[in-house]
Image (cartoon, rainbow, N blue to C red; front, side, top):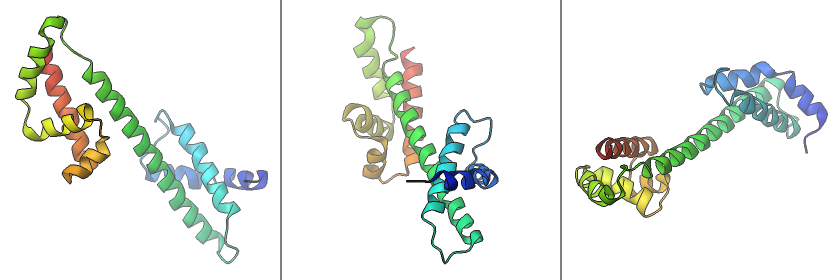
Length: 161
C-alpha cells in the first residue's frame, strides 16, 4: 500500500511526471491527459514506496521517469486497441439501405479487395482473432495490420455506399 507521505512526495514532483507524459507525446490538450497524469503520480509513488535505499535520489527519479513513461505508453496502446476494435465493429455494420442488396453488394465489394486485406479482415472480423493475433499470424507489425484493416474497411464502406 502506498502511504500518504509517498503520494505527497510524488505530487511534489509533478514536473517529472509531466515530462514523462511529454516524452510519450501526451499533451495537455489530450482528452485523457488528467487520467494519465494521475496514473503517473501513482506510478511514481509506487517507485518511492519500493525504493532501494542504496540508490540516490537522481537514480530513483530516472527509474521513476522510465516507469511512468512505460506505463503511459502501455495505457495509450490499450486505448488504441480498444478504439480500433470499436471502429471495426461500427464499420462492419454500415451497410446499404436496401437489405435485399446487402449480400450481393458485399460479395462484389469483397472480391475487389486485395488478398492481404481479405486475410486481415477475415481473420479479425469473421474468425474472431484479435488484431494482435492476426499480426502475429501474418508476421506483420501491429501498426501495419491496423492500417491494412482500416484501409480495407474504408474501401468496403465506399463501395457499399
